[in-house]
Amino acid sequence: MVNNQLSLAELNALIGETIDDAFSQMYWIRAEISEFTVNRTGHCYLELVEIDEATKEVLARGRATIWSYTFRMLKPYFETTTGQSFTEGIKVLVQAKVEYHPVYGLSLNIRDIDPTFTMGDMARKRREIIQQLEEDGVLTMNKELQLPLVPQRIAIISSPTAAGLQDFLDQLENNPHQIKFYTKLFPAIMQGNDSPDSIMQALEQIFQYESFFDVVAIIRGGGAQLDLASFDHYELAYHVTQFPIPVITGIGHDKDETVVDLVAHTKLKTPTAVAGFLISGALAFEQELLQFENRFIDLVQQRLEKEKTYLQNVGQKLANDVRQLILKEEGGFNLQKLRLEKSIPSFFNQKENEFKRFQQQLERSGLNYLKEQSFDLNQKISGLDFYTQRQFRMMRSKLDQTSQEFKIRLKEGFKQRTVQLQNYEEKTRLVDPMQILKRGYSITYKEGQLVKSLNNLKKGDKLQTQLVDGKIESEVTKSEAGR
Image (tube, rainbow, N blue to C red; front, top):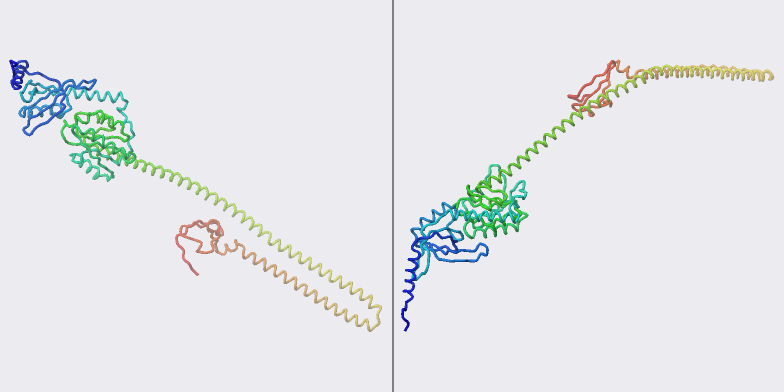
């Protein structure tokens, strides 16, 4: 039989005593929280690990506890100091007592925590993420996108229950300028370890409608500052840099700028600030359009004034040219009238002289013919007997009578022709325009055309009236038909 036998309980008790003696004091321990649970009594149970930064291999693992009384003090102290949730995935510097329990084994009883260590680690991680994005050449890619002139189709990534979501929608829908926006919510988890993956999934959904949306608004609003750690995430930030639509953030914090804020196209503090930014952008474009409209109206008015002045000058020149043409034509008309007045009497005198010469020629030719006939008859008569001569003398007497009657008729005919010519001359004189004007009449023209009827006139027409001693210009203001 083997001596010095120990039961398991005795061995564990011996181990416990040895550990208590060897680790009687407390130690500050650096580790990363890999698992984190809080039971119903308020006790916190953790699993701590140490990971090789280069290989990502787990170098050490151990259990730890924070009893409820201590946990109620450490948790708010840590979170208010760091702005980071006390949860898995963070590196901590804790003060702990090494303990060994016969049933539960080795564990660390955490008594205190140094939040500045975690803050330094968070800052270091943030710097490493930013440095990696710079090395990848993607840090400013989303900022380099052209923001639409009027972003009105908004893809929203937010929790449906986020405090700032409704405020954001209300401000867009009820803006005082009545600018219309189209919004579509793509729900996502906005805090905790699942937040980065959830937001990336929402971005993937929006990417399917890339050509439709103008901008993406990642809004959170409200909540604790310590819930922002999920936005200091390399993969999420990388997704934002690669997104083909401008991303605007308003995740509700004033102090720190997360990595997602840094890589987004535009970073604003709150969801309402994002709404105000969108409204002001649309309003600025509307005001620019109004300025273009006013400028266009001014240019049109200037051109109209210029063309109006040009037309007035052309109209004035045309009026002067027409007036000069009328004067020129009037002078030619008067000259022709004078020539006609002078030519008519001479024409009639010429025709009267021609008629007289023709009358004389007829008289002379008729008398010569009668004389020749008379001489021939006398010769013929002298050779006839008495009876025949008597007959011829009777015929001659009759011929003389006929000749005398012919002369009388011829004179009467020329007299009638002369009277007709005189009548024609008198009628011509009576219809002479100047003679008509001398009797108190006038002649009215519109645009160089003789006015013969009221139907050719309308109010505002310019008229020229010719009197015997000059011309009058007038304008039609009223017309009345008469008999």
